[in-house]
Image (spheres, rainbow, N blue to C red):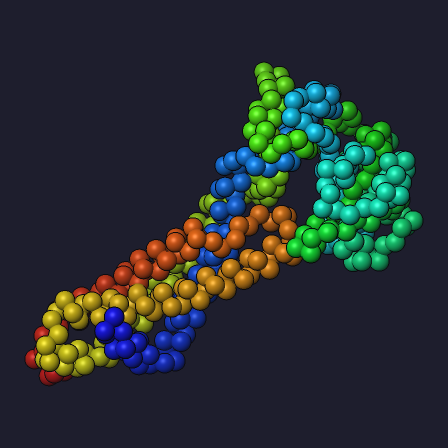
Length: 387
């Protein structure tokens, strides 16, 4: 620590070059924080279901496969189950593919399991009693200027109606609001009556996409999940019961191997960072050869010079990397508030910081190794003579 001022002065000897290098390191670790947040969410999504009160049951083979509606009564009869509902992805388009938003066919008791979504009793009743009824989030209603009583046409991309028609029209009977401001992103969904959907669709009648089960006691979550899956053991529709977070992660992961994608991107970013920062350190040492010779002349050992240069390299990466991780934490919190659980992300917590700090030290040592070795092996006579 007594040499910190010396290291700091040497690092900022060329302020412009150092600042641009710090910005490069900052950008790399900002990206690392964001991507590792996503990777961690996928890695941890299915690790445990203890302590949750809502479980999602999907096909064990693939969540894109449907389940028979006959499972409903079996799940409802299980000990520890408080409420059960079901839903089916629809995938309709409103006017233009650019207007994409989630839309699902749901049971009439669907909103009973989501108290965080505020829907008036009159609107709940209207949804149950209106065959073509639909409920949308307040954010979505504001985006398209919808109001109660409007008719909302959706173009089917998966489920045509009997007779081949792709046009579905729904009557807007309710607008729900998220009680928690951090869940405002969940208001960008349209739900409509599953009974109407099942009667009118051309295929898949009598099946649902997934079940949502609310347990009476969070301590029973694991027990209930196992019991639900046991109902269809050795059948042609075996199930997998998981948390809502795991379900959302599985939904997003259909677009590719998230771990491989994140790893590939970060590998390319850090390889480029090593080259860039290594070049900065090599130039810095080359410019200071006479100064290093003076340090050795006044008593600094080879090991001391080696330590000073490695410390400078590590400090450079630590400074930029720490700022990048702080910024990534702010961005992740903002994204989580904006999109909710649509894009699984964990907060930039201790585990991500530990991985980040480990990478900072490792990269600092790698990029500083060759320049520091050159400084350590420097001969005073050759350096002062300009050789």
